Image 1 (cartoon, rainbow, N blue to C red):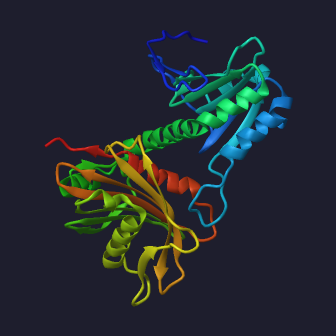
Image 2 (cartoon, rainbow, N blue to C red):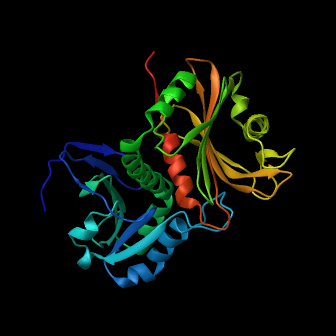
Image 3 (cartoon, rainbow, N blue to C red):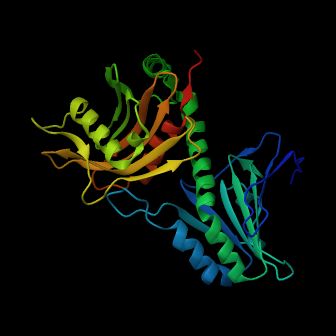
Length: 333
């Protein structure tokens, strides 16, 4: 295996660990693995079948919020370290388990693009099972964010060569930023404060919606305000298939979940994840949106992806729309 020079070490978290991130130069093989799949490397089968494996499964296989059918946030694959060959080392998301009694405390080390790209490798070493589980529980949300970032990078690496330049130019002209929207989408509506991009297939519909309103107060970032703004825009611009029908937000059975995300490229941003439905009809599906204040224009801007495909799994397609939203880049003025 080719040795790479270590160029950067970043201390990430220090609760009961020293966690470092290393960037390695040079061209890497393309990473492998299924969508949202994490490879877990253990020292033996007992670790995978016991408390450590149960802890990993309980978190990473939890249902993703806002989907009409139950779908785990991730898929898990497993291999023991004795079989952790070069082929497995190319997997995009790797979590390695090490129990080492000589250690004084649990330590997590993470490396970006260790053996392939994009890739996130995390190794948690601990003197015993209890301290391993405690450390994992303390940092698991961060691990999920790192793995999610790799997924988006992989998707965008596929989309960039097929980027629709005409759509990118239209978005830039209207909103002052670009998105990596692959070919197959078309502009269904282009208004002063609203743009609707659609990709229609025989049984499915994938859409990107961008809209803006004047930014006046931080209260506009709370859940009722975000839902009210979304419903106003959707009712005005996205009609349903029947007369008097229109898109709205499902708030009773699957209330929208709002949280701040720290890695979105527009600065302070809140994510809203939930279900949409059509008033006076039976259509519905998942959506995810990102809302931020644009200091250049004084507007509150939302970039949303929503998907429709009855009776089919939707996690992977929604992730593709999420990746498009995360591809945002401001245009130089």
